[in-house]
Amino acid sequence: MRRASTAREGRAPRRKRRGLRLAVILTVLAGLWLVYWYGASQIAAAALDRVVARAAAKGYALECAEPAQGGFPLSLDLGCSKAGLTGSRQPLAASFGSFSARAPLYWPGRVESEFDGPLSLEAANRGLALTAQWAHAASAVEAGIGGLKGAEGNVSGLSVALPAAANGIPLSALSAETARFSFAPGSEASAYRLSGAADGLALTKDDGQALPPMRIAVEADALDLGSSLGLDPRQALRDWIVRGGALRVGTLDMEAGGFAASASGPLSLSADGKLSGTLTVRMRGLDALPDLVEAVHPGSRERVANIAAGMMAFTKPVETPDGPAQETTLLLRDGVVSLGIFPIGVIPPVRF
Image 1: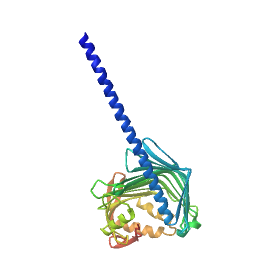
Image 2 (image 1 turned 180 degrees about the horizontal axis):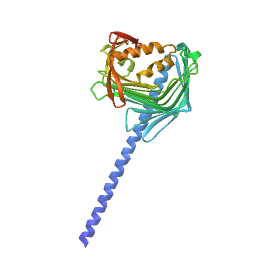
Image 3 (image 1 turned 45 degrees about the vertical axis):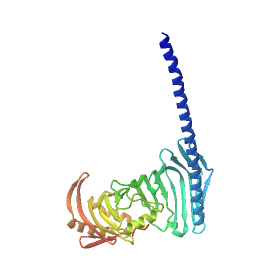
Image 4 (image 1 turned 90 degrees about the horizontal axis):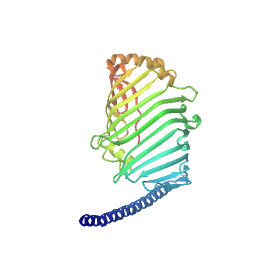
């Protein structure tokens, strides 16, 4: 009896010592996490100051009304009730309702943002002016020691007004039910996957005519781009072009007004941004193409109808998951698109 009592008395101090050690460990971890959060907040504040200073050096002023910071203990949060950007050297004015940015401290290198409209943008030197509103807009950016690794974003309920007099383009408005994009390392080494889609994309011409709603989607791999985009993504893309700019299009889909087309194949970008390569194209509803192009460019129906009729001689019928289609091969050489030996269009150079 005494032996059992002695054993219980011996275990009690051991439990107390284990509890004390656990409390000490938790206190130390909490202290380290507090230091980590505080250090991250100071680094973020310094980085923000550098961005503001760099913008000022280029003649731009960043504004942030009622800045807020928080998120302790799991994240670092920054926000503005109203944000703006103005340019003194080059006329530019942009503002939007508010934004918030969140950097999860358990996921280093990732920053998630949300934006509230409306957005107002005016760049007189580029002939651009627009206002935009949306139901929801968010983005995320990932970076590492080597710089930017990827980005993604999505928006829903988007509507954009484009004053024709300011923009000099034949559109007065556009809207989209949903739109998304992502740019991130692909499954192959040194490759990057670009994907994007827009559903319910509607365009209104400057004469008030609404074009047929469209759906577009793209997935492509930029080969041999590298493991990250570095600290200067534009320069990384320029260097990639110098190395050959190899691009593999997995799918490029468009559907509007009863006409649908999809393309896939290898492409390359020249140093001056011109595309070359081969695309396998599948089309459905080819008889609806003249009316669709006529809605965009009045007076072109007859010409497009002749092209569509001629294309039948260069296509073959195939079965697709969406039904019967016509398949052909388009050749691209320095931006000139050819069907067989006949050039049918020109793709403008891609600029970075």
